[in-house]
Image 1 (tube, one colour):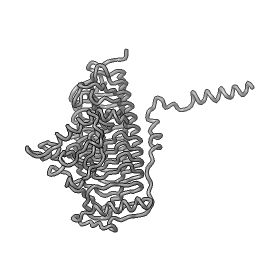
Image 2 (cartoon, helix red, strand yellow; image 1 turned 90 degrees about the vertical axis):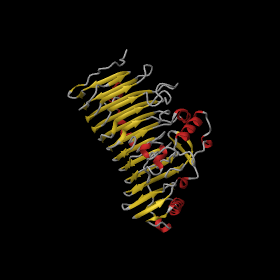
Image 3 (tube, helix red, strand yellow; image 1 turned 45 degrees about the vertical axis):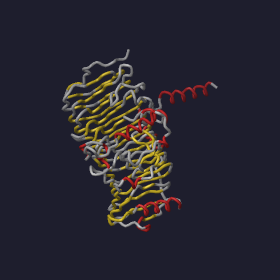
Image 4 (tube, one colour; image 1 turned 90 degrees about the horizontal axis):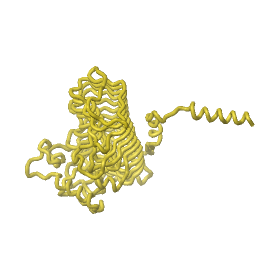
Length: 469
């Protein structure tokens, strides 16, 4: 009996004290997150769009051919809808379950810039608010196992002569007397605050709210691989309320207004790897709904892994916010390269007291930053409306390690509220070179810095911040 007790005690001692302890290593969770992501697989049955009447002459409208090929493929247990060599013109494309849209190497899909082609309106989310609006260029609702793959080009053809002028900026082609989105945007946000049902928020023609490029909505098992996206009317890749998303070896290029690269919103289990972003707004921006609408839906964006990506122009490399009312948690970004005088920040969190929401468990490591024009790390509670709302945001458990930057205005720039400081910020093993200004740090609790250098000197906290009591 005594021998049995000794064996049991030895067994328990081993498992309690000798097994790997991941509680202090959040990165140990990354393989488990990746394992949970279901990457769709497709039957090796090909539906060539030219068999459905498509002509790749750069002149023929192939909208019907895309629609028929995708429908036939889906109705026959799925497979690959193939776009062969050529230039194919189309209106919006609706993806159906079990369909992989394959854009081959010498294929270019050019999307119409005529707004009427994107009607009737569909159920969408626009800047974090649900409504009925123009269809995204590629859209799916409630579908499973969908993909856009290949090595060809998807060209939104947006520029200052069409979609971009709707922003209402002179730099984007707008001149006095031309229509713009400002009244429509204001009305949409008012409807959301007044709890108008989303399907009664009817926009589209006359409201000038630009569509996104690819928006799967309430979908599962999504793959985007190998393709190049160019010149979106607004945000490029925008999955909403989706699960299991893989974005692999994708190029996103567009310097227009609000040309965010990848904006997962209220979605979970996401892997972004080996991608290149050159954008007119944030390269990657993680979101969860805006204000009252985000709180109504109350679905955070979570379990996101970003690996081996390159960011060139943009407002930020890896960004959280500002449509953040549903919260964000468990974000892991590693082994990325960021470098451009037109890239403003490397890592950015933007929120305010109108958005609210909880942002937690954000882990970044092994960044190579050539140049950013503002801060390597920026956390801002005063974005847009600032401290003028009843929904105090929370930001906690942020870790930045093994970052080397060569030029920036600031290494660290943080402004939080007295009543809601950033909690547990860890910066380890970082080197910030050619930094023009001292750190700005307001309201951080449990701020830990180790082995960090700024301009060749130990990183010192030179402005007031809150310490642990």
